Amino acid sequence: MKKNHGVSLIELMVVVAILAILTTLGVPAYTTYLAQSRRVDAQLALVKQQAYFEQQRALTGAYPTTLACSNPNTGGTAYPSCPSTCTVGSGTATVCSDQGFYNISISSSPAETATTYTLTATAVGSQTSDTSCVVMTLDQTNNKLGGTTAGTQLPGICW
Image (cartoon, rainbow, N blue to C red):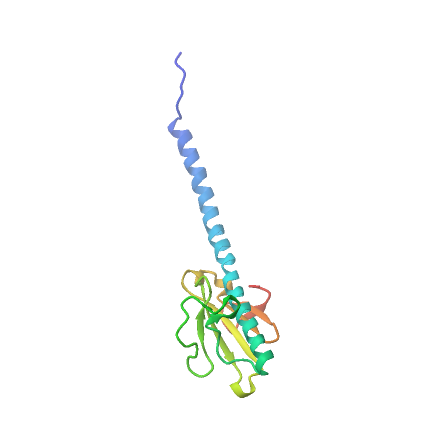
């Protein structure tokens, strides 16, 4: 009798079916994991700006009303995609995070009495698929919030 050394079509189809099931389960989990790992980009950008704000408060007695367009900790290296001027409108500015997954903006009290600020990171591009943390904020009292929109943020979810 002749021995078979190959793989039957049924065995091959079983392997293909198992791979399809694993892929169906694995790809969404990986995509979610990837989006969650990119939150660090927003956290880092917000903390860098917060350090700049606290430094300026220590030097001048008031918080600045615009974002830092360059990183004071690296000898003035410009942040990616930073506009030539950070001021847009009155007291509102936008800078990209280091990896470009978030836009960073600020709302603050008037310049002469700048005692409060709120830094906001808003997801852009592919990061908007992270629907539970589209917006992350950090303020002068170190309140760290995150959520789907600016009005529906909760502490600790995205941090």
